[in-house]
Image 1 (cartoon, one colour):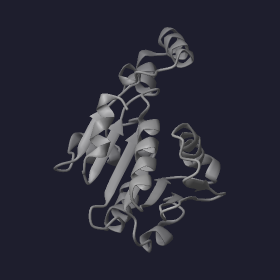
Image 2 (cartoon, helix red, strand yellow):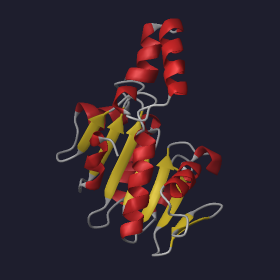
Image 3 (cartoon, helix red, strand yellow):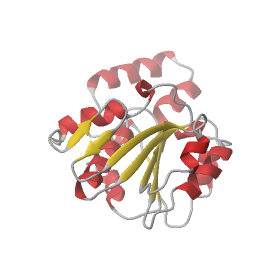
Image 4 (cartoon, one colour):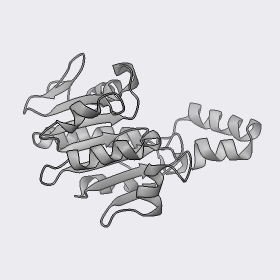
Length: 202
């Protein structure tokens, strides 16, 4: 794990990683949650504002990381869920179309909100009180879009007390691949500066 990810292994109600592409945010969170679920039984809701199919979820990223971490004997990757031998369960939902079912969920120990820049205030109003187990945590990853977006306002402009909030981009990824660096360099030459900054540096 890069140094900035060490905070994922300390208890915080909110763990927030934001910034541009290629930082390794999603990989770090996937690995940390898989290890958390390996260490003890967890019920982990992986959500995003819009998810029309499982192909839009982080299920496939988690499956890839299970293999990379050598945890294939522990985790059973099923069509719609991932289950650990100790009862750890990963659940995948789109918030906007599943508000009522999410409100009624019990026993969620971790919420991972991916692409959280699109999460609306009304969705946050449902999600936060739903994650209510003792010691439960809300993990957030996003590439900022507008400073007025609810997620940015809640966790960057005015972060909750005790939250772990870290901005990371491609410079912070010790395994930043050459193919992405080639794309970044090309984008820096060809894109408007504000577009480049949003995609790679924000």
